[in-house]
Amino acid sequence: MNSYAIWQKGKGSATVVGGLAGGESTTEAAQSTGLLPNFLSVAGSSRQNDLDVTFLISLNPGGYSSNGASGGSGTEHRQAFMTFGDKSWGSIKVGKDLGIYASDAILNDMTLLGVGSPNLTGTTTLGRIGTGFQYADWKQQIAYTTPNFNGFQATGGITQAWNTYDSSSTATGAYTSAAGTRSLNSSGTGGASPAYEGKASYSFAANDVTGKVWVSGFAQKVNGVRQGETAYSADIGANLKVAGLDLTGYYYTGEGTGATIMLRDGYSTTGYSRDVDGGYVQAKYTLPTKTVAGISWGRSNLDRATGETAVAGSTGNLLKRNEMTTVGLYHPLTKSVNLVAEYSHVTSENQAGGENKNNAGSLGAILFF
Image 1 (spheres, one colour):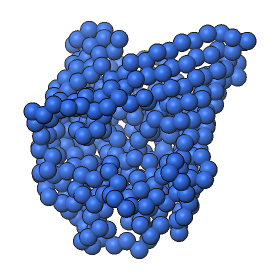
Image 2 (cartoon, helix red, strand yellow):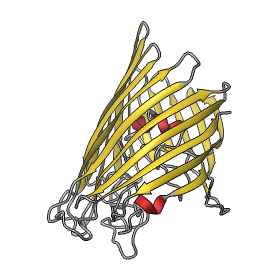
Image 3 (cartoon, helix red, strand yellow):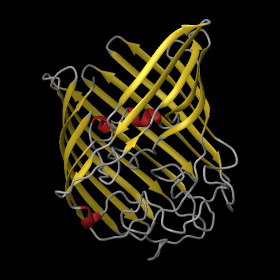
Image 4 (spheres, one colour):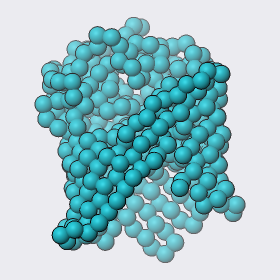
């Protein structure tokens, strides 16, 4: 369970389609959950016919109110899955859970325990989603995970295919499709084939040094386009811990997959794919008080497609980059309660050079029980 008081002030009046900094229109004080929603889950496990069998179902209520108005977000159901397997040959997951591609990027993001970039009209805030990595999202999937071979482990699976949409043309329209925008897939639930996702990682430990290196990828066929019929993204990341220092570096690249939400703004209205890349670097240090001090910087870049130019209008207003710097303090008040203070500076630039900037601060707490 978590909740934060959030203050943000914007600067700029540019229209940035897909931008995460809304400029002057986003000056606000609000109360909201952070990047993690509230989680209440029911889980069980047993050993049957030489198989380890588990299940998990979660309820995820969000909370949001601003400018003295009462209200709130609805309840999501982010997880509902089962697994079965054995440590000798691995396990199979069937159901809805965090996506495979880019999952390590979000799980290593320090703003996972806080707010990061606010998105105060949604169930949660954004953390670093869209300013250094793409959203792994919560997806229906069938996936196989190998046993752990002395630190090496891999997962591969098929997941629900997404549609690809254009964002609305408003300054803060990163999440709401404009009326009449068209899907480039063949149906309302995705393409003609599933998406394919996979990841591999190696974890190591030597004396006081521990670390992890990972790669992952996403690919999906997109129907009805003129270029880039397979939308794809791939990434590489590493985390290293030594003494009280915790370092993370991450990079991704793709085509047709968009900068924030998978496949959102990945194609032009004429069906040509847009390239995307980005990444983040992060450093955290545990102080003698056990308070973790962290600083993180990241950026996501979206390129124009064939035939698009950086001129004023709908193409010129298209996102070019979302960038964010965050500093934070995370203090364990008890073994269950963490107090959190963060400051984030978010910049969104369009293809014509127009910019919006947001400064956001937050104070709150997160409880694990």
